[in-house]
Image (cartoon, rainbow over the protein chains, first blue to last red):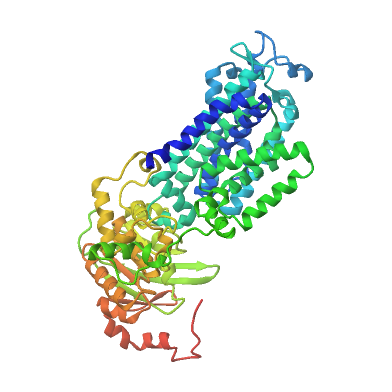
Length: 378
Length: 258
């Protein structure tokens, strides 16, 4: 029974990975792949916000850095030797800027996708956390940093094509167009594997004493200090990890969208990321992935029919979660939400009538010690 | 530096703390001998909590010095002071509500507190035994796996005391350990604290005079940020200055409650 329950979700996941590419049209599959890749940045947000209590509104920075790393590599990959990416011609740039050079190497790019955002996040985090900036001030600061990056990237036509961004779908990997259906199917599988890997990483980070320390930072940071812990080290580390995950997410999103642009650092997009986690359920990990996929899929479906209404629906959803489901969908499910619905439709589930006795561990321990059941129990 | 038995383990030298011109501590001198049990009392606003904040590094004194084992604690971060061996229990029980009592204790138990040792290391058998033993000492074995937030007030108080013991500090600073406890629990807490003295240096801040009497130890009275008098409970109680600050005999009788 227990074994069956552990294996079932994994079986379903593998089945979905095999069946969906067969039954979904390429367009839908590509959408699903993109939204799954957003699940990785959401997992990072759950790690820093849901567990550690740091609400970052600047994850777009790290997301875009990962996207640009892969975008630059693909731009160079498509070129015959000696030529420059097309857009440089528009601005009269004759030589490849020096910082583009290492992106010829696939290995460097693969490292850069997650190491660079981790370093930027680690540095930014260290400076902020060392000065004990927390709460709202931290959120504002991350948003300000996001705006700085957004404006900087927008203005750099000669370096990274500014507002227009970098296109990736015309590049070829192993002779195959990045934008082709079969390549997109491979990318879908890659995304699926990486989402599971990211989830497993977060699970490993949060389930032991390290995770307890993160929760302790969220609930009472000064108390943890007086126990001999240095919260700055923990917060910096976990913020860097979330940054790395955002970078991977951005890279996967870029190759499946066909473009990376400064829009990835737009302020509303980073706020949306937080909403996905809030709706899915903070501190639940799986809720972050579900939230990212469900909300984005709903967004694309609604936008196809009624383009103007999505923002209202998204706002309403956020209000609903804040007021009625503070722990998100997954939190609601875990706290017996379905039982409430069951009760509402007139089919109440069985419940112990005297929970104080039946569920109190102290009473149960005493009962075992006495070796008999107390009289008058229901 | 060698520390002989007569040297105080912790010493506050002419410590003053000013909050925007208000002197929360004013030329405070206090020293604790190794293994001593000491009670600190004082009316509201006497500076009792600021006094703990200064020792544990939360507040930096405006003037004066705090010396622990011959070493000044000024400018050392809170977590380093804690690692040096000064543990603190807060006035209102501060336990990690969303963790179980066992996990609360596992976080507090003595050992490396660096991120990587928490990630890759495991508690050794000695640490696990210590956690189990402390759960038994404070009677939370049956509740070891439920959320600490669902414990009663008294159980939280004791869990926090257990967390303090898990840290295994040399000096225990205990702020109002029996607030909100039943008579029986108060008695057991007193016995626990008395049994700790000797191996540890224990400083207790409390309002409950019966409890202080039960501790049967030297008492320091704080008033307006400095030491008013020191001595055994009986002597302190009959000191006219103490009676005056507690009852406000002399002038208007207005309680100083800043």
